[in-house]
Image 1 (cartoon, one colour):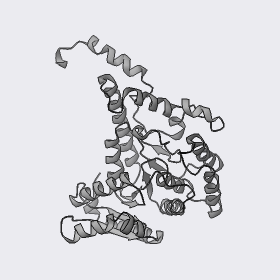
Image 2 (image 1 turned 30 degrees about the vertical axis):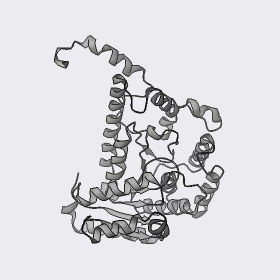
Image 3 (image 1 turned 90 degrees about the vertical axis):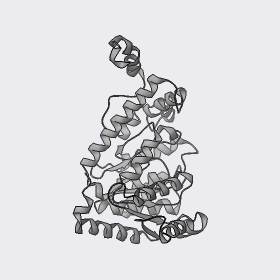
Image 4 (image 1 turned 30 degrees about the horizontal axis):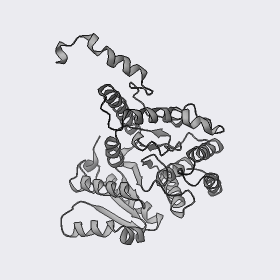
Length: 329
């Protein structure tokens, strides 16, 4: 029993907590500078030895589901600290104006959907929304690029897209993918607009986007998924994706159905053909609503970004008109 244990019994654990390649006592979110400490965009080889990759290799060496009790405790302490940092982030922002974007990690930077997400995120950020994503590549990165470029001209956005197009996918060379993102940051510095990325070392082979100003990187993907689907109290935008995005849709639908947090949030789907023909999740959700199996879902399907904006603004008006129903924190 712990009550009968002496301090010396815990010494091996305390020593272990000192030597893991991550800080188990941090209670703040990462910045890109911290996460990629040791990485020099002009020296691609340094990617392998930056902080993020050192942690990832340690994570893999110990096992994604580790049997090492000391490692398990270390990861739990780290993730708890990140969770505390998320709470601080929410207290500094209007949580009811936090908008999530879900979608495929494989979306190319040169794809028309990537550009649409960038411009939509930029517009929403300029209107006072705080953008959130899973913090990885593809649709997630596009979300944070849009937020990062808020307040800048169309020409500057197009130039940023041209810079990133030099490395369309993280799958080719993650070092080049990352270096072009840092080039955008260097070319267009800003400290006005903030966004939140929530990646995980479970998918550590996918670089976390440095374009997110705040990065809540977790070891446990279940905690990560919970947060990316509960923190966007202002609504979630679903762009085309695969298995992970499908999981997120129905997890979000369950939260809304049961009013897990006291009220439902909008679920807005971009890509009419994709969501009705290629992956017909939208008709299924409609059917479940019509038959009463799901309740409280606020659904919308469109190809037009302006429709997305108006849906989200309409929800904000409802919040303002009935504030007593949305007093969560």
